[in-house]
Image 1 (tube, helix red, strand yellow):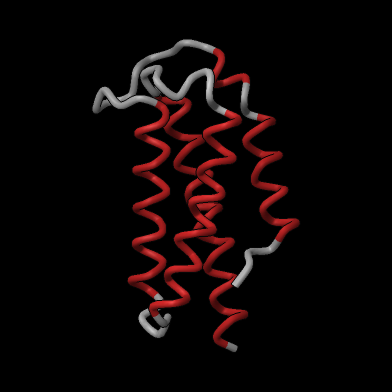
Image 2 (cartoon, one colour):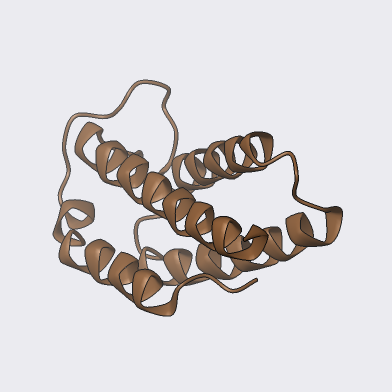
Length: 116
């Protein structure tokens, strides 16, 4: 399974277009989490939900999904490396949550194609 490359590129572009939000300070989001912690938590929640929704996925498919998500996380951590340890703001939390949903959508589409 490989996620849609144009979709992934769109996701990186979306993050890059909103990068200025990560260079600003703002109202800290509830929970006192860093940008990195919040990013990992949101993406993990979406991937857990993905695997829960697609019970027909085999163990090897889930392993591939996890490897691909690790690659995505690595790319995002590179892009956001200068702010990973800073407290996440409400605005940043919104963007991160949206990115996590977009990642889930990419994998939902890949799973549908795989199982057809």
